[in-house]
Length: 437
Ligand code: MAN
Image 1 (cartoon, rainbow, N blue to C red):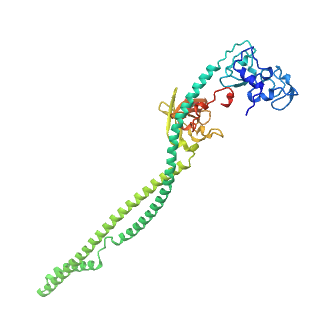
Image 2: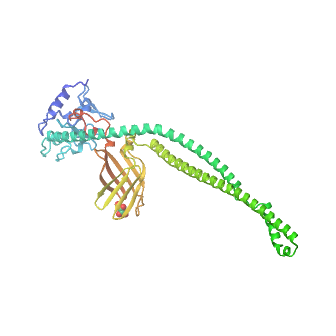
């Protein structure tokens, strides 16, 4: 439990109604941040220890408009130390810490809506804290609504991601097994093919057998000797003719036999060729399927291994492209892929996705695209995409703060906080420092 000492109670109570010249805050507590009040309260030995512990000074030297502590902590309420901090309570809104050099500089500091930074200057600073608190509350309400809606969409992304991961866990081993089986089946088909191709050789068209050739030759000889035979007697001619007929009959018989055989061979060869053709088709189809399955497997493994941000929520946007036209250029980037700048018909490469580039604790707040087209007399083009919560995926702004170094703001539900903060828990001001927000 925090003990509120009388000094703090007084400080807090009067803080909101401080008006120039009427400050009831004791001098030694002026500009002191609530967290440090304890150190500034007067102690028995009436000495103040500089906040960095470097030295003790008389208590009366606090806020005496003379800088004693090297960390500037003895002068929170004056501009005496160049490195001091002045705290304005901004009762009803959010307290703020400003450089103490701005105290009584004649300019109403916009961070001190209670005007206490000008407690002893000619500037008249009205207390605008209630207005600012109202504006801040409206802003917070909008932010809250935006974040709630964004978080709702993000939850959809996350559940889609969860089912994709679950599917992949089933699909990957199934594909691996399927590919293994298909490869074995291809090997079997190829072995069958080899056998068939070997068999095919056995059924190649036969050469004219020797016996048939010799019959033909004999017949030719006999026919060739007709002239000579015609001159012989009737009996010799009859014998010779009979020989011719017999030989002719033999030739015909052999030819018929051979032709029958050849026809059988031809038919068998055609059958085998058809089978070979069919098997080759099956091998081609199986190999095509293996290739397709291997590509699918590669992609599934990539998706499984790729860093899609916290809980993989950015998988929902993988390869999606967004564009934005600013003045003369249209900028386009595709998540985890490429970025470009277009003008007329020309496209300039702004780089390929290289890494998440947020802070050590929040790496998934920024994307970096690098190694784009080289800038004339400059670096290779690059793009930094700052990710912010939004209810839709949309580029909000693009700038080129340095030549050929582009910075984009991309709003997406994927960047929303997972669980949105209930509105009543949002800071309402009074005790939080602006830097903490
Ligand atoms: C082009 C664009 C600009 C860039 C200049 C640098 O005009 O890519 O964004 O600044 O080249 O020469």
